[in-house]
Amino acid sequence: MIRKLIAVAAVSGSLALGVVGVAGVAGAATPSTATATATPTAAQCAKAEKLATRIQTLETKAAAWVPKAQAREAKATAAGHTKVEARIAKRIARVEKLETRGTTLLGKISAKCGSATSAS
Image (cartoon, rainbow, N blue to C red; front, side, top):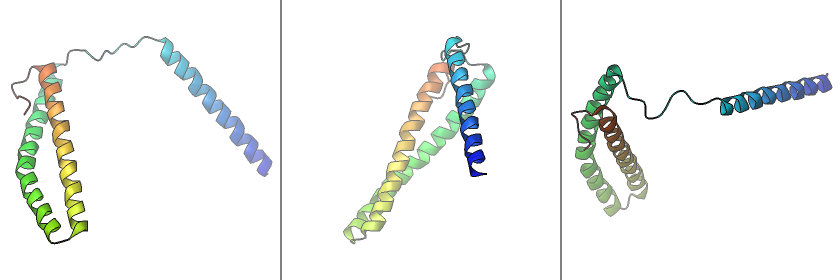
């Protein structure tokens, strides 16, 4: 019984890899129809404008939050609360990372759609 189970697993695994291998080769041989430089439609630009507005709102909130968090971090460090300080530092790093990603995304939206909203 166990031998049959192992045999079935081996056969099905080799078939699955064979299909994936053939699909991978076929996918590599066919030219890509969608290009990365395709011009966006009006609907896509409208969605991008909504997203840009939301990103700018969140970046404004983050810009107000970071100095307060840094003050709390300094207070925790002065009081010797290293675990609290580490958690606050981690949050600050995450927010700053998201800010840079948002700024990058705003730049891409502006470049593709020629939006009125500018990257901050």
